[in-house]
Amino acid sequence: MIVDAAPRMSQIVREVWKPLLVLAVWDVIVTVTYFVLPFKAPSLPLTLFGSALALFLGFRDNSAYQRWWEGRVLWGAMINASRNIARAARNFLPDPDAQDLKRSIVLRQIAYVNALRCQLRRQERDGEVLRFLSRGEAEPALARVNTANGLLDGTGRRIDDARRKGWIDTIQQTQMEAVLVDIANAQGGMERLKNTPLPNQYRFFPTFFTHLFCVLLPIGLVESLGFATPLGSTIAGLMFLAVLQIGDDLVDPFADTVHDVPLSAMCRTIEIDLLQAIGDAPPEPLKPVDGVLW
Image (tube, rainbow, N blue to C red; front, side, top):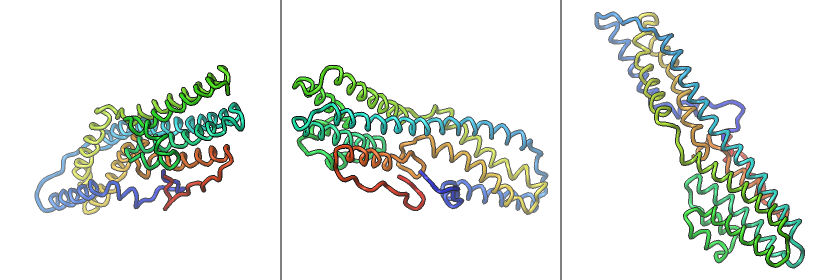
């Protein structure tokens, strides 16, 4: 996530420079053709076209931002639930009998959020899980397609074992299971966002109409702007291409780009809070790198 106070123009141009370069070349061709060949440019209702396109792009960007914000809300719920399960393990499980189990539940939760982060970003997850769990404890979850869900299932079984041993009662088990349900629900929402793209109409038509508008733009402007047509048309096209790119940037909040939800920073927040809950020394919070918080 870009955390600079204002977006960098270089970043915007870097993302749209290819269609912008094509547009600039097209603008020059239209301008030269207008002054060299004896033809009159048709009058185009660019204001009407541009207004309709702006509304279309606005609806698309709003839909993309809603997906991005929902992803952030779900991870906020994950942070809260992780703190809750660690607090319940610390307060419900007795010392010293359940000390190892208490520590196991907390470390499994840290491994779980990091595994989920890697799954959402389509990254290798084994190394992140093994940072917190031994190979023997992590192997059953790593063998599953959904490693994060496997870790969560294992935590549930350990809570049930604690109830069987008499360390917690059924009410306490129910309370801890309710937190695991909240965690599973948040994961399901994240997977829905990751695996369900915007409808094809929201992806294809805004791109098609924006590019079509950029093609018609110099034709409609050349009579009034003359030799300034390449400059004016390119700047106007940049605005529409930038708005189009905003929707592409936000539509997948877990895409591992500079625009996505800062999963690494939030996983580090969970790691710090949970390690402190069991008395371990926490790592430092992640800081932005070149204005980007990952």
